[in-house]
Image 1: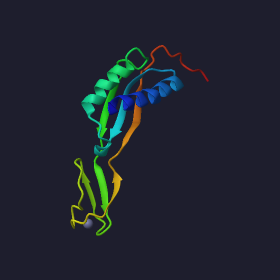
Image 2: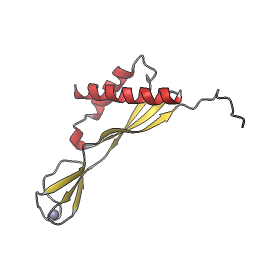
Image 3: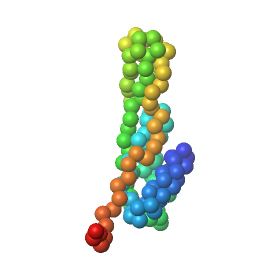
Image 4: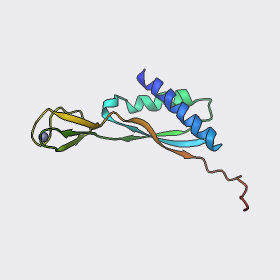
Length: 122
Ligand SMILES: [Zn+2]
């Protein structure tokens, strides 16, 4: 139940964002790299469960899949793929330095438009 603890963590972050802006969060974008081992369907399911009966109920998680990127220490080539790999796509060397792929972070949150907001007069 990896996804549940992740969803709880996301809920904590978004609760704070909503509280800070005094508005409801409607959408949140979460960047996920293949190495984070998150199953998107399970995350959506977990999100519905942990956000129920909170101010975040009904909000939508948008999952932004980011690829794995690794730079070869042999030839300097950067290999990018959505599936795990162990060799440089250019020279076949296994001396790779991982640059991205285990992302698991909230990168954006959309807040509800408040129509009852009084105009601010200067
Ligand atoms: Zn290489």
